[in-house]
Image (cartoon, rainbow, N blue to C red):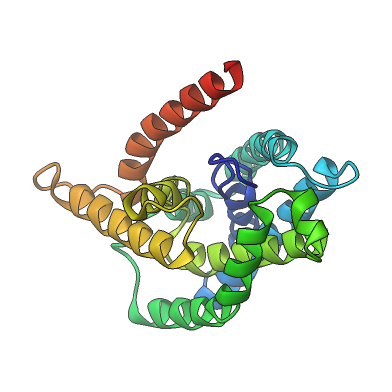
Length: 249
């Protein structure tokens, strides 16, 4: 989607990954590989559900976002219900993981996340090229010979896989994926989203948020996700106002 609101945080993919991890923890598994599998499974199921519900002779960006927000809200309620029904230890582990933090990550999880991310990144050149075609519009891309719906499915799978790889290690650190592409676009002055630039900006945002989380309150270590939620919530509000003004025009 060319809509700046089309990020995994907003359209429910991250919430679906969280659901998969909660179910994994309820099943008694807590290793990185188990959490990664749960996050990937939950994210993919959610992504395909959103895609199918939004499909009306193709998938349009605005419809995808609205359906994703609705599915994400539903899954958020389901996650809360799971945590209420779980035992205290499992609920605490899931809640701590769901806050999103870099402080408890060990090198084994970092290594596995890096390997999975590298595997997904091998498809980045193809994804980048097809994304640029899609930004011209579905009709124009189809006229150029691009298989539009298959390309969208490929991008969804790659996005969910990348999200699951890092989410399993650090938890769902919200709004980084929402802000990074737009900031990178403004810094580079390009009209299209550059995957490399977005990845670098996202890494810097994450490091900055973690630095604030560790030192904002002396003697208290906050979850990184708490910082990104505060900043990202304000940024989301700005985007919503900007998009509403654009629609009025």
